[in-house]
Amino acid sequence: MRHVFRLNFRDQGDSHHMNTGIFHSCLLGEVIHALKDIQQRIGAKNWALSGYSLGGNFALRVALEAPAAGLSLRRVVAVCPVVSPDNVLKSMEGSYMGYENYFIRKWTKSLKLKEFLFPDAYEYEEWHELGSLRERTGYMATRYYEFDSLEQYFDGYSIAGGRLASLEIPATILTSEDDMVVPVSDFRDLPENENIELLVTRYGGHCAFLKNWKMESWADDVIVDDVLQRSGS
Image (cartoon, rainbow, N blue to C red):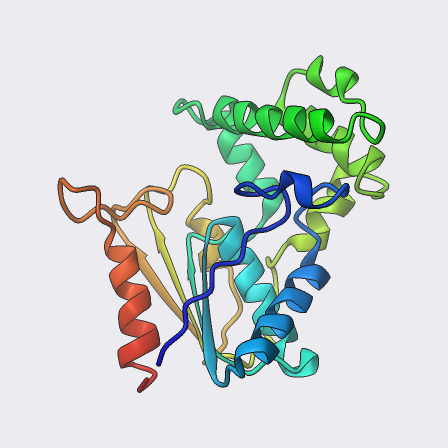
């Protein structure tokens, strides 16, 4: 029997009401805690983890910590993972595709719901008056995430430079040259590591990789092939 478990970060999906605290991208500890809990509950061994975009970033960071954390993780597949948060923000700021406004709209909706659910805990009136995504992220990082600066916050979940050099868990990273959110150049600067397999396609966009008119993604096929076939499960 195979088990598939989907983990939502806090404030993702319909989870806003479950806790007062708000989500941010450096909350790796609670993600590892949740994965250890599900591993124990179902007795999982030699399991695999996949994620898209920020989820891919979390998956790779979990893999870095897995041996020390007692996670029986054997493979990771990351699709268009965020490598350098600052470069991602710059890409959205310079994009003609409207990604920056899209993320602002999504974030605004999430924070309004959080404020409605916990009116005594948060007051975002000043945040709503800010303009750019950079300003809004910096505001949250220094006022609610307990970082001294936006740069310190970004550094907290970056996997750029040599951070993946010590990765012991085999990982497949799938990305595309036409990704308008995560620059393909970020992946070419990753360290040499025999545990990292980098797949770069000409087209695919950011996490799309559409294979037919039904809007099905062959990134899903890559995950299934990597996890089930190549891993011998």
